[in-house]
Amino acid sequence: MRPDIPLNIPLRKTDAVLNCPSCMSLLCLDCQRHAVYCTQYRAMFVENCTVKNDETLYFKESGRKGKIRRRENLSGVTTSDSDVFHPVECSVCKTEVAVVDEDEVFHFFNVLVSCS
Image 1: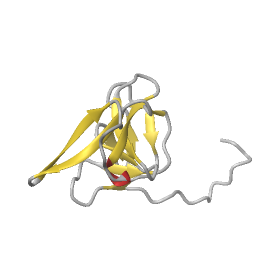
Image 2: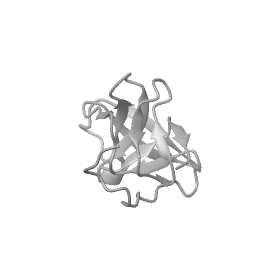
Image 3: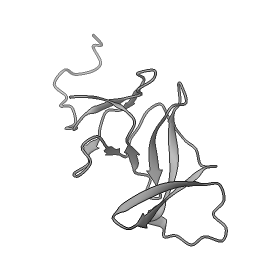
Image 4: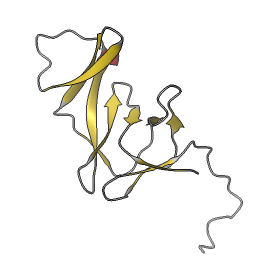
């Protein structure tokens, strides 16, 4: 126990604690569960995550189901900023765990979930 940290500090309200499914490293302590997709979470503050800015994903509507496709180069293709994502991997073991959008919101989909 550290004497410089008071015991009565309230913890943030979070829907879950997220860990990497491969190495179990902590990824996020403060996240919100997706309203429709119950296995997905979004967060703004993460740990042990590396954004792969050299790789781009985009969301394309095709009928009722949307598809995420990989793209190395953005030239010649017009998409809105809300459709562009970058993959996110665990900094420890390099497992892909999320995507990040242009607003810097992380969308986790491949994680171990613990109740808080």
